[in-house]
Length: 103
Image 1: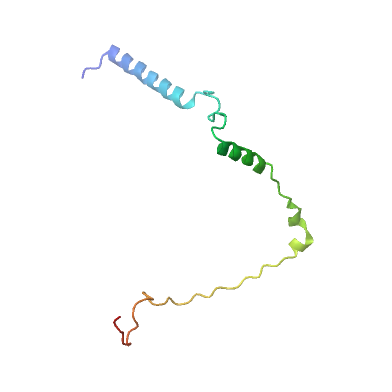
Image 2: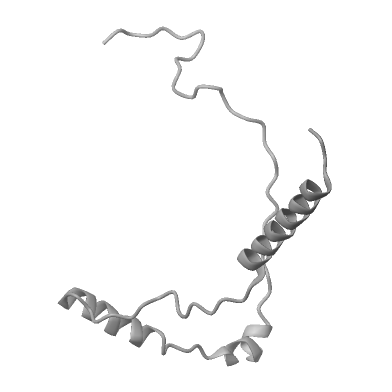
């Protein structure tokens, strides 16, 4: 391929156009609005669900219990777990040295 001055200019313009397109696609701040579209409930069950969700969002927790002296005096009682050897590979297999009866 023979590189001429016009081919080099064309390649540079194409490269700059590509860079501008990538920048526009990834970095240009597009305000498309909310992704969730609010619509009216379609059924009575959906309306009940929306109402219950509204009630749940108003739940609050009283965290004063964590500063209560009765809570702060609690002591962690833990038991050390001692590792033990593993049991039989197949616990349901017949025991060796015992007679089995066929049923």
